[in-house]
Image (tube, rainbow over all chains, first blue to last red; front, side, top):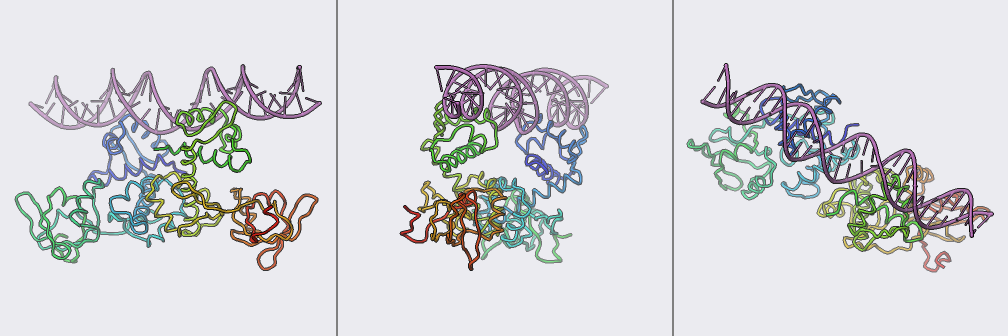
Length: 228
Length: 228
DNA sequence: ATTATTTATTAGGTATACCTAATTTTTTGT
DNA sequence: ACAAAAAATTAGGTATACCTAATAAATAAT
């Protein structure tokens, strides 16, 4: 059985590999992301390598093996199911669930996850809108893209965010932009790329590119210009 | 904030202090109960002493301080709420919940415990029939006693068991003696103290003293001879 | 292409939570 | 009361998961 402390690494490596364009994570960004010092991570990567969970070749970066990826997706599954449970069943706010799920995800009981999954309504996406892999590591399909890449007139739905920090989430909560919120892009200011969006019952907000980049959406019209 | 690893010790000390007649736990029984070696426990007791969670005076045994007891009851509360949740909400069997609750109890979030408590129907007793302390460490009242101390003719209700091992629990499950089962003590064999009990729709079983000692019951009649 | 900067690696150290083996202290049995 | 047994304590060791400081290697900048 895989160790809890391995899971943290795998999840982090998976996260970095995805969030950056390049498929390889570097040791130092991994250390930074995990809030550990490079030698600590270095030491551990050798072990993860020995366990055939990653491939770490000198300075070619870190890549998950098939097994490593499967394990990573399993932790992600656990994490996201717990987040959904905490939000939907336990009524925790969007921004509170991450920290708790971080602890709950360490528990290894497939049976428990099955039950929690059912209690949460067999979700396909977590409260941040991130897809929940199934038991075999298969992710549900979506056409997520950053709100930033919109065209004027686009109508889309908020699927989630890329940024987990409470600062960012509280900012969105203040704006009252939440999961599944429908947004319509009224105007894009060419000067800096800020977007004026309409949402709810006609409320308006101007979002900076930095914010719009972190908000993941999916167009509601099949033939939306954003898709091209 | 109190450490997870402290909580294990406190719960174990509390458990021993209660299950044995004497209020003091000894180092070696604690070590045995926790499946650790005496020097390990010895080392740790000194720290728990420094933290003012226990009083450990040479060979006078181990006693919880006020603070230590409060913390112990808090872990016990968490443990028993999780057990109830797992049994009642997640439909785990009586004998499966202990191991999982052991892990879940390490999570420290009062808010989470409140929600899980409500989801479980604000229980006063866990699936083993053990009382759940409230937030202030106050236990609900019962008059629990071992089935072994019965008189012939006593009718009582099963509140729980003292033994948590799967062997024992599966044995009871086989017998179909469960929580809240009503038992009537038909006969006590003077030879070894075995009890013949009637339950359900007239089913009978003979229980060895060793088993009867682990089953905790409460008399159903206010004036039962057992109470004297 | 050579220096400067960044990244990776090595060396060596700390704290925690365990262990075994040896010794001392306390308790128990006769 | 004293030997035997049990329990507590000390001494010293291991593995894990961190750390800092120093060095080596790779990458970037002029």
